[in-house]
Length: 343
Figure 1 (cartoon, rainbow, N blue to C red):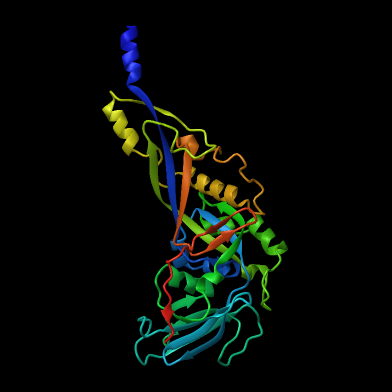
Figure 2 (tube, rainbow, N blue to C red):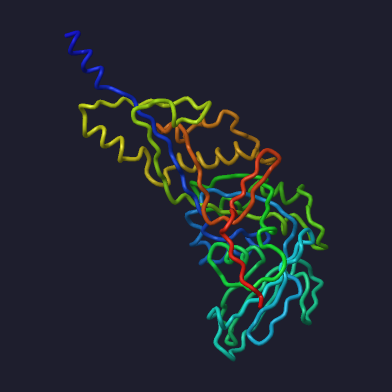
C-alpha cells in the first residue's frame, strides 16, 4: 500500500494559470460636454451598450482653429495652446464623403457664445457635415478625428505638428458600469459632478473649462487568453504574487485536457470587469478614486477568486498616453501612425 501510494503521488504535480484580458474602445474619447449630447442619440447608445469600464481624464482644451471649406476640401488646424498646431487637410471627395461638385453644408459648434461666422473660423469645438437635403453625414471633434486617423486609418493630410502630442491625458478617475448602461451610470454620477465642479482647467485657451477639458474613455472587455506553467517551477508568476496552485494528475488525461483548454471564466464575466477596474486604479492611483486597491491583486471578486494567479491587461485601439503622478502608460506606441504628406 505504501509503495502504491508513493507511485500515485509521483503522478501528481501542480500547475498555475495567469489571465490576459483584452479591452478595447468602441467609440473615440469624448469630452464630458460632448457626452451630454451624444448619450441621447440611439445609434451612439447602441455602440456603447457593452462598455463596462470608463476613465475620466483631462488635458488642455483641444479645438479646431483656422477652419475653411473650399472646393470639397476642409482645411483646419488642431490646437491646444500647449503644442505646435497640427495643420490638416481633408479631401471629402477622395474619401468618398461627397461626390465631385456636390455641395455640402458645414456646421460648426463652439465652446463659447461669442462666435465668428466668416472664414477662417477660430476656436471651433466640433464640425458637422450635412447634405443639402439636411441628411447628416458625420461629425468630428479634434479627438474624434485624431482617433479615426490613428485607429481607423482616415486619410488626413498633415503638415507640421504631431497628432500624438494632443493625446496625453491625466487620469482622474476609473469606474465600472457592469450592471447598468454607461450613460445611466454617469448620469448624476457624484464623482463626475465633483470633478466638473472643483477641477480647475489646465489649458491656456480662453474657453478652457473643466467640462470641455475632461474626457471620457469608454472600454469594453473583448478577449481573454490564458498563460500556464505546467508543472509549476516558479518562473511564470510575477515577483511578489502568491501562486494559486492546481493539483493535476498525469493519469487523468481528461482532467489535464480541461485544465489546458478550458478557461476558468466565460468572456465578460463580472470578475473580468472588477479586475480591469482594480488593475487600472492600482496602477494609476487616480485622485478621485477613494479606494486605491493597495492589496491588488488580492481583491474581492477578481480573477484570483476564479483561480488565476495573476492578470495582464492589454488595451487596444486607444491612441493615448495615460498618466498620473504614480504611473505613465503610453498606448500610442511607435510605428502606429503614418503621416500623410500635405503636398
